[in-house]
Length: 249
Ligand code: UDH
Ligand code: MN
Image (tube, rainbow, N blue to C red):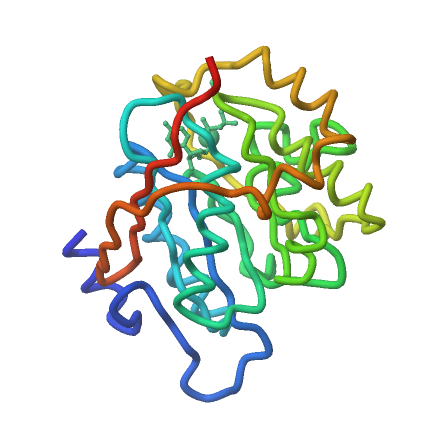
């Protein structure tokens, strides 16, 4: 981590950057759901800070850590990231990124566009193409308005799977479509890894998904509940640790 800091001296404390010679059109918060992936985070920071600087974005990095050993809830952590980053700065654009995904091409702009934008549309692990048409996982970008329009993400997906399909459906049911970069520009790499302990596939997530049409207006940004445990400012990122509870028994 010390070496990383030395390599990226342009980054301001807390993981912030602002281009010195232009006025950016978007203030960008990058939100990373996190638990026990320190080595992936170092890899991500190593690649992304230089890319984001070359893209001349104004950005802040927020690592949202789930405290404790309860089942992981990726989408709920993303909602927490939206709320906590917004408390710190008037961000216009929110990029929700897995900790283990890195773009291969600088032209894959980490920015928001007309519709919610899917930045990881050509991942190496899926042969550099979408695994299915409605795939919307890995890295996605929402303006504040787009995020609020879909009522954020569901808080009810505990464990691995289906929360990204829920998000896709929220987008289309809200009358928006999805923007994607060209397949060559959207190439991304995911670090190969095993499934984490505490994030096992949860069959109950399909039940949540099948009901989402009726529940999405009550479940999301509007119903988010969590407690803040700690805000830790590092040189290259801000880490926010939260208690988000546990799945219903
Ligand atoms: N995450 C954590 N900690 C966890 C679980 C998930 O930080 O314990 C975050 C992290 O940002 C990660 C994201 O949630 O990138 C998504 O989880 P994932 O990387 O496990 O999702 P993926 O779709 O899962 O990559 C693939 C599991 C592959 C198992 C293959 C076995 N052959
Ligand atoms: Mn992964």
